[in-house]
Length: 278
Image 1 (cartoon, rainbow, N blue to C red):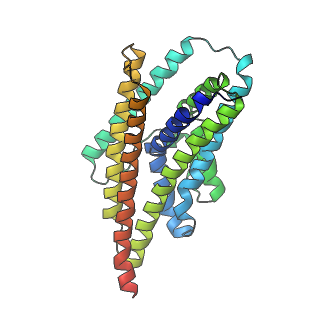
Image 2: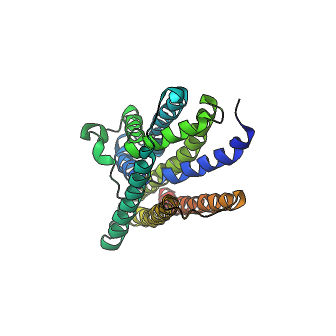
Image 3: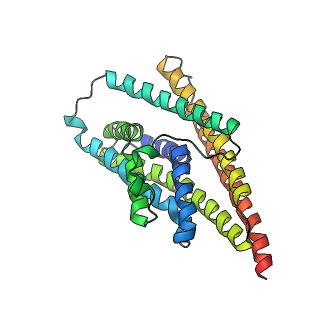
């Protein structure tokens, strides 16, 4: 039976983590690149690129989390692995934040910078087939940092309800990530298609949207790295549930405002096209 005290706070946190993970620079970069090609090859499917990617990614996360929850009683994990995982996650957050910070300062034509895309075969990365997009999401979900986080969630769920709790965690995470990635592809696709109908380039609006996402990525990456490093060093803040909830709601609000601005830019871009068609 699932522990009731575990349900709502944990599921709410996982939803917010899913939203944040949906704005991972690797996600944004690979989704936007596929959307640029899909607008030409599969225009009706292009707005749903993020949905397909997030579903594949979530499938991998769910399999790892539920699998660990099922077999946790037979798995003995050395204590030092927790320190190793924390160190690598902090290092990757700092790396991603720094790469995007430098890219934002140096390049006017900014594109989110990540490190996972290089792990995907070129033939798969260049395909616009729906199954290929889902497969790319699966590959991203099985990369070290995401897979280890999913395994940790599965292990934690073992003491609070087993596989059912792990499935609930995976579902809440999935909903948040699907929402963020779907809105991203919807916005970029609409910007591109509206600009094509108007007979002009989409570079300006897309670039403004990308740079806004880039600064959010930098802030989230450094902020999460600082918090994780403080906890690892024994300087964890003693925050109550209300404070954590406020932080989560604040992060979700920032994401929502950013995506709403992107949607507004997309509508703004579509008006000249509609007026021209009339």
